[in-house]
Length: 319
Image 1 (cartoon, helix red, strand yellow):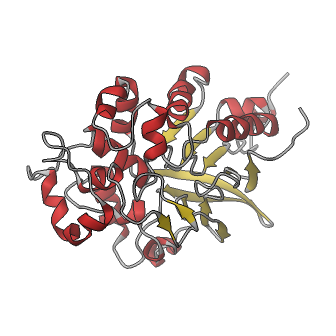
Image 2 (cartoon, rainbow, N blue to C red; image 1 turned 180 degrees about the horizontal axis):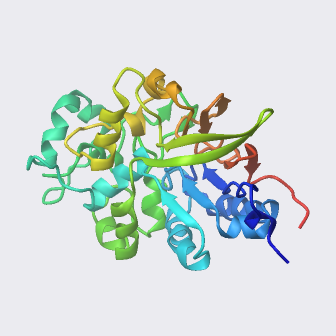
């Protein structure tokens, strides 16, 4: 019997794309969400899906080590899927601390990244173990530091070790927060995972279901978003190069500056999908998928394209 997708004039079925929000060390939430996606999406579509993880795999939750193990194992468990692992700002900082960020292309040292934010060193308690910190990227020092103020007034929570809440990540590897022993405790395959994280991912043809039928769009996935006031091509070139000369990567850690879609991308329908913002926000083609935000009692969510269905780890689905 002929497959209807092979018949003349029958358009191919749109590929399933799953964009998964910030996990922040919650392995049980990740497993439940994955199980729900596998239950909800028809097996042939799930087995060949493009799965984009939007970053922030570590910190806050208790199980960073197990989360990284789960993610590393996906390509062998689902060989026909395509997996994209974006770097979040937390992952960049973790990578910086364990020494696997690509070096600055201009030959400068990572210590050059400290200067702009030096006034914050004492308050944030930057990591400063002799023989280890001297040429560490700013974000690695902030990540492993010990913040002097214990309460995060913005979030209404206690800091977990550092301004990044990295204490739980250290603990998941059996190491006390702020200890350089973590560099030895993190397995080589985890370091490779962190080293290989991309800062941006593009797809030329992703489909959305609309009232008018299937809409073909470009998709750009980046942890926080693209800056509205800068040329998009310039930003994409910078992100693809993973330019570590800068102390802070706005597309991975910005807030208001990266919330909206740059106007030039409206000339051709372009989905911009991100995590990072501790919100689930869908407005037109701007998708922000971070319902969890690293909070223990919040759901970790994903959006499935072309249907635009939101799936959560807390959904109770019939098996």
